Amino acid sequence: MDTVAYLKRFNAYPVEECFLQDLARLQSLHMQNIPFENLDVIREVPIYLNVENIYEKIVNQRRGGYCYEINGLFHWLLQELGFDSQLISATVQKPDGTWSKADTHAAILVNLDVPYLVDAGFGDSTISPIPLGGERHTDHSGTYTIKQVDEKFYDLVRENDGKELTLYRFSLEEKQLADFHEGCVFNQISKDSPFTHDDLVTKATPEGRVTLSDHQLTRSENGKKEKTQLSPEEKLKVLEEEFGILLNS
Image 1 (cartoon, rainbow, N blue to C red):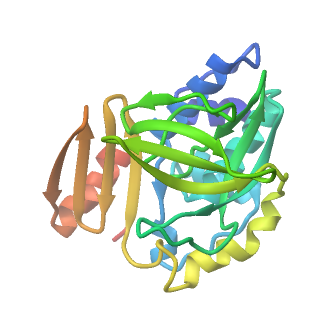
Image 2 (cartoon, rainbow, N blue to C red):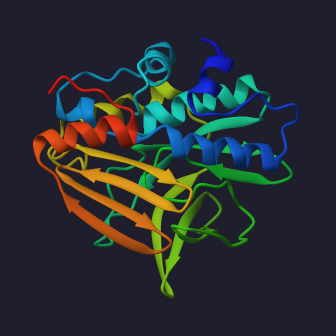
C-alpha cells in the first residue's frame, strides 16, 4: 500500500512533523474527499476488515466506506506517517437516548501533547481532532467537547442551539481492526443496524456538508439546509459528480 497515493486520494501531502495542525489538516481533507457511505451494505457486497482490501476500495476504486473501513485505513496511514495512534471502540447513542449495540463503532485516539479523539468515519460530526481535556471546539456542524464519565469511559458531546447531545461513549482501550468483526457483520446484516435500510452517502464541505439519503440530497451551508428529491437517474449523476462514485445501477 502506497501512502503517497492514499494522500493524493484526499488532496493531502506528506507531513514532516506530527503536530496538531498537521493532524487537523489531514482529518479535514479526508472528510471532505472520502465519503462515509454504505452502498456495499445495501447491495449485499461483503465488507471484510482487511486493510489491503479497504485500501483497494477507497484509494484505487475511489470509493468511501463506513467507520471500520474509513477509520481502519486512516489509522494505518497515521501510523505510517509517524503519529502515535490507536483504534478504540465506541457505543453510539441513538437520537431517542437509547444505546446502539455496544462497541460497534470504530474511532481513533492520537497521542500528542494530550490524547485527541480523531474520527473521520462518523458521518455528520466534527472535522477536527477533539482533546480529551474538556476544551470546546466549534465548526460548521456544532460545538464539541469530550466529557469524562468515570475512570474508564468518555462521552463525545455535541452542542447545538444550547442543547447537548451525546453522540457516543468510548474507552481508551486499544483495539485491533479484527476486534470489530462482530460489529462489522451486525452493521451489514441486522435489521437493527442503521445502515441496512437505505443508501447513505455523506461528506463534509468547506462550508458544511452534503448528504444523499436514499433519493434525497441535503446540502448544508453555514447552518442553512436545502433538500432536493432526486430521480434514479439524477441520483446516479449526484453520486458521480458530488461524491466521485460510479455505480452500474
